[in-house]
Image: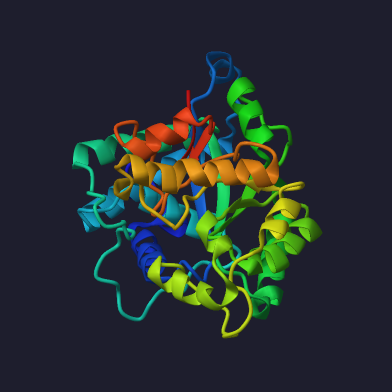
Length: 345
């Protein structure tokens, strides 16, 4: 299906480009950024079982159409951008506001040293994610960072909207789906994900997850939790954390005790030691610091291997990179990227 085949009242090229401009201009550290993620690979029996619906088929067709529009508008977009735009239109209580001045680019930010793949690879990825969504192999995710108490009422309203429509998803639910092709609920599942280990995640996001019945997935960079409170703001600035809390005092990072507590009810995932991109983790020393030591510390504190792993910038798993090989070798079973939740092995 091409973009021109879609009803203008439903998903026109102009509405796609307006949503793309809104997503590109939005402060993703401030917003709850909705995403559709392809999930896989599934077992052969699960593929045959099939769990796709008419809504899934529509989403697959729509993301393919969104990709056509975006790829013609910006030569550097990836499937991630198409998924983010579709999620803005289909998965948020209130879509991002369209900016008065269109941003210079529609492609999402990429970490330094992370090249844009060739167009043929990006086209193939777009086809793969469209097929996954059409086949029901998708997960709805909303990504958060700092969630300060000043935003609690706003976040509660957002969580209430999601709770009316979606059910929680644990790592065990994901693995069950990959094995059987079926989710354990008649309603779609949704994952609220919280990045960067902020104290606000433990003190605001966790209670909201529990009030509205969601399983949170938490991705703390481990060294942040070890920094003394009076050095955490400087650490956050050095490592590209988006800090929203205006209070200059107190801890920015959650404590290890808070992480251990939330791990009894939610999913804890790896996100390096400092907030590192995959491309920056090349030497044995960097692999030890950014992958192996964080995984060991998270196991020590939570009693289990982290449910998933994510790099800064959400780059996909690449076994050619030393850091990615170390993640797989350490027994982490899932990798979260900007376009997929992938099971390793």
